[in-house]
Length: 433
Image 1 (cartoon, rainbow, N blue to C red):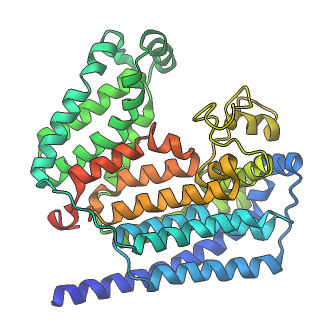
Image 2 (cartoon, helix red, strand yellow; image 1 turned 180 degrees about the vertical axis):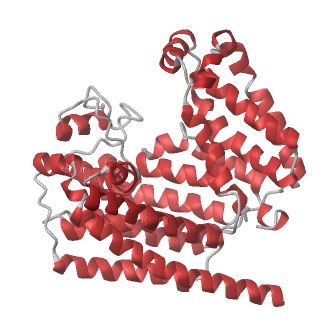
């Protein structure tokens, strides 16, 4: 009983601290945009080609701020499980905050864009609170570890057969990287390895690595690392190790503390980048962090709404001919790059909101928001240990910058959901946090 009381007090205290941090972050984002971001090349180029006028509007800023404040209050006062809580915090940071700032700083910006991001937050909260009866047996955590290990070992056999003859050990020293990539593309063409490559390195092997850390099982940890090194050699893609790095960074602490450290870290990065820009006229840190991860996706939403308003694709790029024939020679990302940045090679990948609007307007946005909110709601009710959050963190970032079909198929969203049912269900209680 006392443990429950202490835990509740701890959670409420942490939520209160996060409330203040989130509000501070929103105002820091506004300062970053006003003083630095709007003057960067990509924003100036978008302004020129899309007719955007950057001008702070206090009349728009007030309602945007009030909605942001209401959202942050909801994260503090509404009781949610830890998984849903940190997802809501991330939706605020990566969707609602930058959208609200663009709404207040771009003259005559389409209000539906900010409305869409706001709807995403509220829908994720609402559906996340709806209890969905999920009846399925869960394995013991050691059984899960063993079954996952066997599944991975069997699953990588085709990689051994197809890629082993072309392995270049110089890649371990970051030599001949591009030569190896070109060789692998020329020599190996297999639909199984094409699809499962990211499934193994971003989802399955990082999950196995967490089990190895938890059980302090050196064999499992070493096998996980060895397999990731092998997959790296199969294509010389350094991103293979991203899943492992994120798992290590986010392994400790519960969801509430993770959210706090995430917000605090972004505040530090934003202030540091702002200082470099203002004091030393060096925008590199701002470009590589706050611009790329926070504001670029929001700006691309603006461009997608501009280009595809009344010109919806009806999922023709994914299911060509189902409703209409795909009307362009290149993929949508290259079309946006060509129209607004005068370079067809400039792949302007879109995320959840703009993908929905591009395909079916606001109805498409609503469909995407419902699907993703339901997805997170199901995961929330599986009682997954926060030790595995690094894997879900990667998936969230894919949602920011990829179409929904790509997220679920190519990047393994469906696989992760199935894996959560089989390997991760009820691990929160079994693995302490």
